[in-house]
Length: 177
Image 1 (cartoon, rainbow, N blue to C red):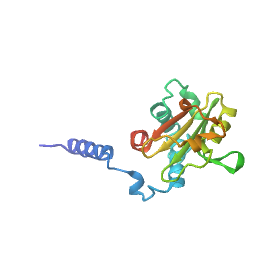
Image 2 (tube, rainbow, N blue to C red):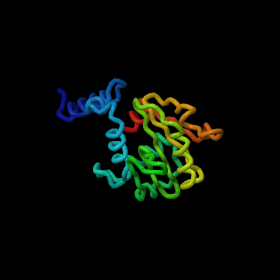
Image 3 (cartoon, one colour):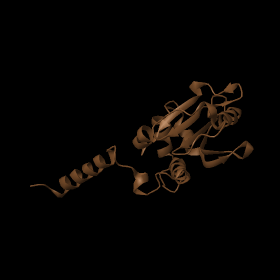
Image 4 (cartoon, one colour):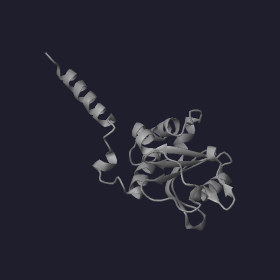
């Protein structure tokens, strides 16, 4: 005879497996899958140690480790991180999400369906390098593709390939959530 505990465990396992399926999309469920600003606000709040989720820096620590590959970062710093959505920089540009943690300045540009803007990643990179000599630009798209050359360059200058880290909702964000 199956106990109540066994049924609860079985149901919980089924729920977890459903969430892990490739077809499940929390953004579609909320009908915001194409609303970049809303998605950025939600992600920024989850990353914020003082976010409304009440989990402190846990989501940020997992994101830094699993999505950005920052395993060696002192996790004590995460509690003091400042996470900003729509971070204003020069020339009235706004970086979708910025994480400031210790000496790190981590700009995340999110592209769902919008096109790259001229010199956008280049400008973000130049700004980030003034704040953090080791800065990279994190480029989050549905499928992890690279930004276009028009976005990563200005005149004869361009962002070094290794300083653009491509992330995807399909792999990185799904696994993180």
